[in-house]
Length: 117
Image 1 (spheres, one colour):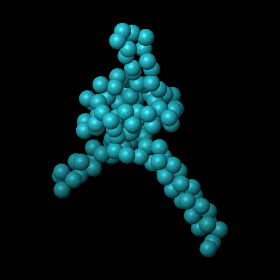
Image 2 (cartoon, helix red, strand yellow):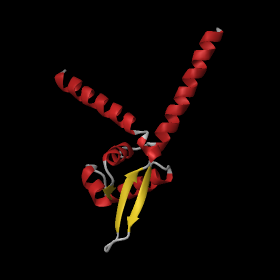
Image 3 (cartoon, rainbow, N blue to C red):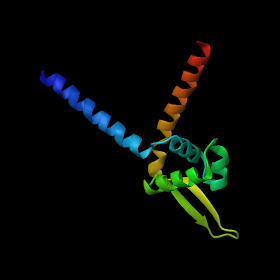
Image 4 (cartoon, rainbow, N blue to C red):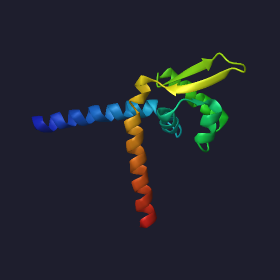
C-alpha cells in the first residue's frame, strides 16, 4: 500500500472511531431530541415529557441520568415549595447544538425528497 493510501486509511479509522464514540454517548432514539430541546431553554421534566413525543416517563428519566452523567445536561433543584427540578444544557452540551441543527436540516430535506418521489 502506498504511503498516501495508508495515511488516508489511518484518517478514516480515526474518523470511524470518533463516530463510534459520539454514537455511544448519543445512542438511542431520544437523546438528541432531549439535547435539542434543552439547547433552546431549560425545561422541567414534565415539559420535556410533553415536548419529546413518544417517550415514556421511565425512558426520559433514564436518558436524563445518562446525559447528566456525560456532563451534557445539568439538573437544577430549585428551592421552592413544591420542589421544582429543571434541566438545562451545559456549556459542553451546547457544543452539540450545531450537530442537532445539521441533523434536523438533513431530516427536513430527506422527508421532502421521500414525499416528492
